Length: 246
Ligand code: IPE
Ligand code: IPE
Ligand code: MG
Image (cartoon, rainbow, N blue to C red; front, side, top):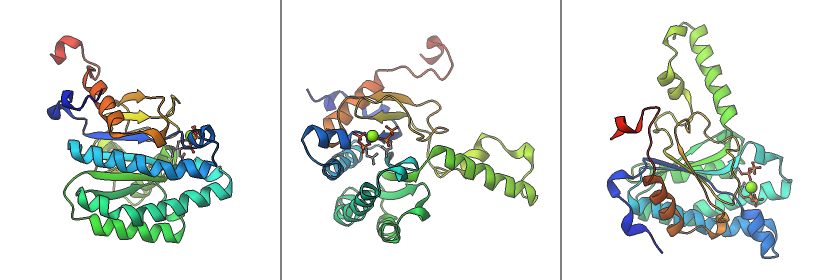
């Protein structure tokens, strides 16, 4: 049953992040090569983006390629990078139709030139849109992000632009890739794995986790509806007591 009618539009998570996992296992189950699973996964990306835009969610962050994914066989990495370029070309219309602003987090300068150029183009074409902020995590690793943050802050301290006493949570936040984004409210991972895999470690400090056995290529709008409905049934206490929240 689709749960859409029961979603409270006034209690939406501001920031939904998804670890899109299970492409390889999906392909294996069908007797196909892993690349076919990645290709099928692009439809699920489109569904998730459209669904988030339709609901009025402000931020959707998708884990598309981790720093650790560089260690996969070169042929698979090449496939993923080519798929990124072709999907950006193909989906620009979907982004425009849904008023989506595209952004990225991660070590973008490590991506192939072609991918960097295509990203720049779509980012610039969508920069004046007013709707959903879609962020692709590409060559993203949370520890790498934190190390980068520490380095940048140290340089500022060394150059007397910042004193150690001024380093607070806001300061750290403002040096992360996610500087202008709210914390993650809802973290979804598909494929049954229950781990974080170096994704947004700082930003998920108080996120609600939702794990589903659905493999990413099978993920559809109603699965996102289910996750949000489930999220809305929870009580987020942020350390307080239940009585204080009510
Ligand atoms: C997620 O699917 C896509 C990426 C990590 C790029 P996987 O490729 O990890 O699929 P499984 O986990 O092997 O099934
Ligand atoms: C995490 O998935 C990275 C992305 C979804 C892009 P992986 O499949 O690479 O993670 P592990 O290896 O299962 O932790
Ligand atoms: Mg995986």
